[in-house]
Image 1: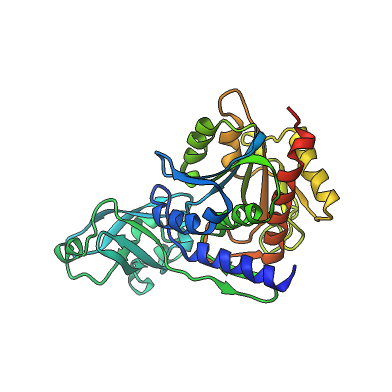
Image 2: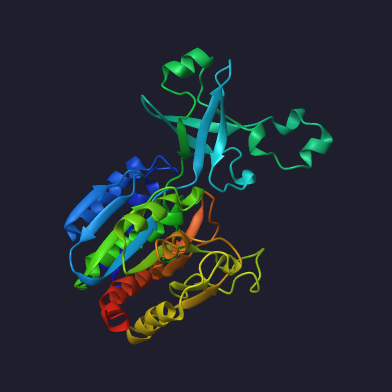
Length: 355
């Protein structure tokens, strides 16, 4: 990857990762996406579910790119009399990753720092020390003296919270941060639009509420009625301690990932024509790719594929370690090559799906 291009995609991912927008409250990060994508399209609008829809006019077949903008987070359930915030999880948290994290409470008055606390081990019973602390036994401390002071800060039931963690570089082209799931996919979508010379109509959609039911993708695909679709997301590599090759054959640094099937077939089973389109494009462009057949989670592609009378849908993702945590890790080279594959696939769609 050229140094300037590497720096551009790194800066884009950093800005998106450091942004905030939990499922159902994506407005802030959608504004960042609008600023990055507007120059590459003819129109940008927000639909009734908060999806950001960027349209580039062109010919058939029309192609939808879906990248979910939301991140997993927390939402205030109530503030107790001592001023501590009790919360629910929004999205698929593993409880142990939450304990003792710093959070940003998105109050009506503006962002407020907080910390996730729990009973200290010094006062736990011996049997309790042997068990992981569950999220229901955690709370957020913003330093308020009582519930009245906290409420005066603009915090109450429904106030969203996101993890307070900043993007950082590791060795080589490896980087770490929060919400790479799926700001990495958003970065690929934006960068692909900047690079492609496709003459087809393109609908680039930063979808909402993926982490809580693929909701934005359902609404967006139904409204736009594309001929083809690509979802961009992250996938789980099997290249670190605690996971085996039989759980995932993917490796970080070995190129973008093309999904054949996920969620043991209960999610997406990509059509052979779609897989051929993406793999052939990769071969023609000398882009090393990996094929994913997984028993784990799924993506926006599942909702899009089943919209109306069915839409040919594929997935291009980036192998990312430690997803659904504040310290996700990926390779910028993989991210760049993923964007390049999407850009070139947009240009070869005519040949594979002539109407």
